[in-house]
Image 1 (spheres, helix red, strand yellow):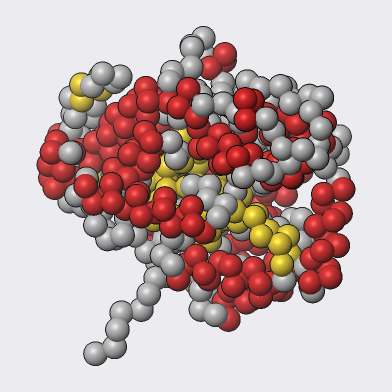
Image 2 (cartoon, helix red, strand yellow):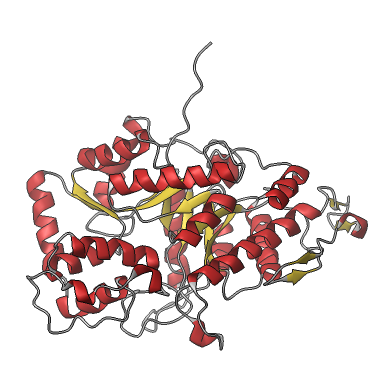
Length: 441
């Protein structure tokens, strides 16, 4: 009897923006570019498209174009020009309501034929647009936990044959097969039932981002894929060990949750070419704007103006991580860098990657780094960059991806009919067992 085949590494790419620019001759230019990008990613057998989101315009422009489109609307459009690639929408559990979200993501799953996923974030910015004060991280994650519980309960409550297709092509709906959930928590009271029929996937795939103490607990308990920033292998090993330990404490098995990293790469043809590309990249940095970006990575409440670029930061400037209300995971990463003695210049260079895993090298060297994490069991899903970037696209398509395939690390075709099966997630837990687990945890 042959040993079971190991699940391969799954890949994501950031979806392109559908937005029209003021100088576009054709207002559909953005949508056409996003369509072409999605189709190319699907032709490369990329497992899914990922959309980040912010609920404000960053006044300093540090976030680039993040947040300029609603992820759900953009992905609904892209679902109609693709047929296999997964669609991951980032959604704030702090500034949305679970019933509305269940309807929106559920409809996307129907529209895409079972390819929807949502990435639960708690949002550390944007409260000014909702007339609210920003909750503490602990309160935001307590709300997120209830939010996910409500969404899952709504999906699980309705019977699989609640809607059937009539010979005429129309739908026949049986209201008796839509069931209430009568959820009462500290943050939400939701009666149900959900008025979107049962989903092709049962539930959309659950991603979650956040690596504070409270965030790790939410990911360990509810997420199927946890998105984490782990720039160093030793940190990744410690994080995944703790995440899976907590997940087992919640009664979960099957090596859940899967772990996702964003891989920020500089690809070169040779060592000399890599060095040249890195040098040019660093020369393009605006170090005055970089001070603002680093301050943001350190919680946003420190002033780095006037400090010498080639000296370390004074310890007195570094914030206490547990007293920070925004982006504690990033604060922890960059405080650690500062305590290691990195100069302000070096910290600003690191801040360009916002705390993510960053490697420069030839395709073979980059795949060595990826394979090391994959073989170590700390990497299941990887976000790749470079498609649509004239400087990196050819090296991605004709260097990095072929080398990953040559080593048998990524899929050469889609392995299932929906996103859940293409990620090779274990089957969803039966509804009764899931409810029992939630009550006991």
